[in-house]
Image 1 (cartoon, one colour):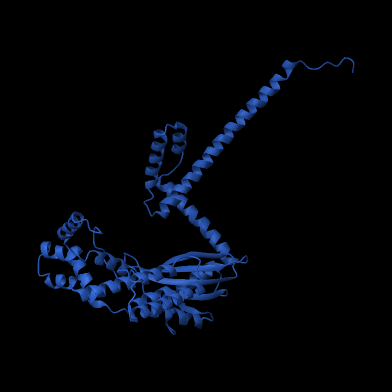
Image 2: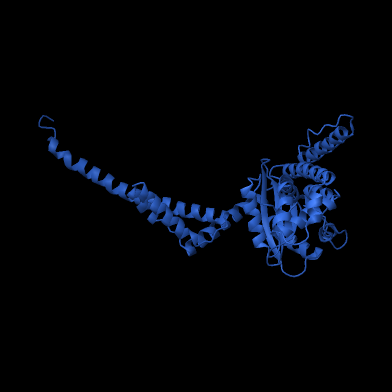
Amino acid sequence: MGNWRPAPPHSVRPAADLKVKLNQQQSIFTRITSTQESALKASYSVALELAKAKKPLSDGEMVKRCAVEMAKSFGDEDMAKNFETVSLSRRTVTRRIFDIHNHVDGKLKQVMHDCKYFSLALDESTDVMDISQLLIFTRTIDSSFVVHEELLKLVSLHNTTKGTDIFNAVNSVVNEYYGGFDKLSAVVTDGAPAMQGKHNGFAGLLQQSGVDCPILHCIIHQEALCAKTLNFSHVMDLVTKVTNLIRGGNRSLSHRRFVAFLDEVSAAYGDLQMHTEIRWMSRGKCLERFFALRTELPMFLEDSVRGDTSAYTRKLRDTEFLCDMAFLTDVTSHLNHLNTQLQGRGQTVSDLYAHMNAFRRKLELFKEEFSSNCQNFAHFPV
């Protein structure tokens, strides 16, 4: 013990240097791993955004070039090098989207299998290729009373669209995700015979298979059907004919002149809007714009449109006709507002029923305002 001497200071230095070098080497590997993980995450994020925006998958390379150029413009060369490491080729983006789909599908199946109850909403429509597409939406409540609303599947019906075809498609999807109809609490469909038919429709076949649950007619679809009973065809016929006269067919010259004319007179809108029956809210928007241009339209028809348009211009200057158009414009505006209230996630049947009752009360109020001695048009601004 008496001969012990402390080690000289210079013997500590090699150990400290080795520790510093080891930390530096480890930090290099950590930094490389972190950069690779960030590049992979960025690749998935861009692929998801391309899918949401319905853009071509080959646009990933363009997004990458734009990101690199932006980083260089800000003078951040390190960030530009990081963007260069992000893989966004068409094949890579395709794989990323399939990975995201498989991950979401797996999570969805897990939630569906563990749920307590679920309900379905069915809608059948036709795409641009004339192929019938059946959309199956689901609303699920799990053991924690958390509600999940998702598009369960989109099934293409290539041949017929009878009740048996719809039932077989729904049965296959429900067995895949839920393992059967045991937990089914309700089904909501449109009013088509293939859906609501008691014998050969989807509703009848579902009950014949032993499933006893309420089968409801979509309340938004009912509202749209009721709105069509508003019989103002003399107004809509003229609006449609004048719009088609200016914009329809091969009248591109007439349309260009009309747009230039509206710009010249500084009109409230720059163009007319087309109306289509399958878009429930398009009638209100079309009428709103048409009525706002009621002064400019007769002038343009007389000066720039070939043919006899005297019947249209006479109507557009008739006070009684304009009153009918103004009333229809206001009513469809209220109906559009109701339709918007009925849409959206997280709404229950009681919420939708409350919106419908409130609208019924509004109609009673409107009727009282019109029938009173001093007519009040506060709710009918047009």
